[in-house]
Amino acid sequence: MAGQPTSFETMYVQHFNEEARPLAYYLAKMNGYEAAKKAFGMTKDAIIDEVKKASLRGRGGAGFPCGMKWGFIPKESPKPKYLVCNADESEPGTFKDRDIMRYTPHMLIEGMLIGSFAIGAKAGYIYIRGEYVREAKLLNEAIDEAYAKGYLGKNVLGSGHDFDLTVHRGAGAYICGEETGLLNSLEGKRGEPRVKPPFPAQAGAFGGPTIVNNVETLADIPSIITKGGEWFAKMGKLEKSGGTRLFSISGHVKKPGVYELPSGGYTLRQAIFDVCGGMLDDKKLKAVIPGGSSAPVLTADEIDVVLDVEPVMKIGSMLGSAAIMVIDEDTCMVKLIQRITKFYAHESCGQCTPCREGCKWMEDIIERILHGHGKMEDLDLLMSITDNINGKTLCALGDAAAGPVASFVKKFRSEFEAYIRGEKHA
Amino acid sequence: MAKVLSEKFYAEMKKLEPRYPTKVALLLPALHAAQDELGWLSSETMEEIGSYIGIHPAQVKEVASFYTMYNLKPVGKYHLKICTNVACCLRGAYDVVEHTEKKLGIKVGQTTPDKQFTLHEEECLGACGTAPAMMLNNDYVENLDIRKMDEVLAKLGVKG
Image (cartoon, rainbow over all chains, first blue to last red; front, side, top):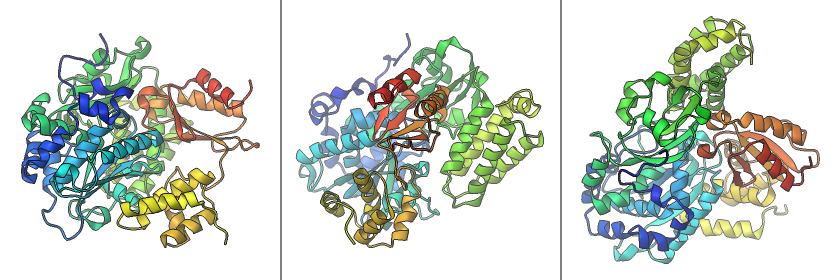
């Protein structure tokens, strides 16, 4: 039977419906704000230790351990500290955070309340992509509810902890999903990534020590505090990754959608053929992009990989934001990489020459191959451009553009050659 | 110079001011609020925002032009932004774009002569499980296909 598996404990999917949104539901059915009460009785170090024990890795794409990140925040700071939620969800293929924000917004708000207490921040921002107009409105309504009941604001639940939470809308820029680009955007600037160090934990938003966490990462926190880090860690099937993960699965499958699976508990094959019910119209599988459009492509022979950070990395791709895009036999891989490359050329912020020029070059070269003007040398030229971008830019956008191109050329070279020889034409 | 932004705009900004340690942080919210009111961001609007925040109009434009959601030219009453990124193009977004171009008699990036419709191709909207997706002004329309696009356009008064 295709669909969300029920053979393990889940935190999210059973609540992903409109009825779950109000505070009343959260309090009655989800043990709402009990984790915050418990956290206020703990020391800050104890909270951070619990999150470390949970092996909670960042859900935005980098997979950095959340507890360790929180531990980087200086205890004392002359400047105010901030907790920022990255709700930009701009990595193509990713749509899971939208469900958290529209169905279970209080999980995120409570997670931020606990996180702010642990790191000593009195202000927090949810930086949400500008296109999520409705989700921003729903978040604001949930925040209003929380203020009205004393879960936000001054002296929350008598703890002595003050926390103000503000929704800040982006305005259409992929790069604002990069944490320092996001911080610049929050400050009212162009969303250009910063030179690191200093890292945000030393000097982030408005110059103060700042933690930036993904929506799902923060929404995991209340469960970790209530049920314990060990419980969370055990939900994951591999040592370093705890919890379940929300997978955004799209493309040519029968049942696309958001699915909650244990970290490292499923192979890509199971996700496509068991969870999503197999290929749309029973076509043959050709390729999969396993972690958002920045992830190098996998062929149909590579889908027995376990879905977790290390296994996917080991075969030369990345799990990223756990956004899986499934591609069938009828898809032209040259046209597809043209579309992906066009995206990165459009979204490059322009600060770093290798990315700004390289992305545009790759786009132009793929374009000319598609239109019958390519040469065989162009394929080597493309590979050489990817080498000249990789690792040579301030942020990961350059690598994100280069990785897919290199993987498409390597794994689907014959399709490019067919265009170059004039056997195919766009 | 006469003000172009309303009292409501200034009231909204006043409410937001205490939320940020700097006034410049109000720039993105101000641009959004202004665009909601006026439909696009003219030079006059950006000048007024600059003088409210206390920055040079060139700084306002520098920021506004970085982000694709800010309209620096007037757009039609109905602004259609169809996502053609990976998940949407796998599910037939380009057929929908082509059909919409024919139906409206304009190309991507153009506005109909009666100023009713502007059509754009959009980057990933984060609605890939219900692809293809588009924005119609501030709302999402998902699981698009040619038939659904025809229904949407019919409701907005496009015949045939």
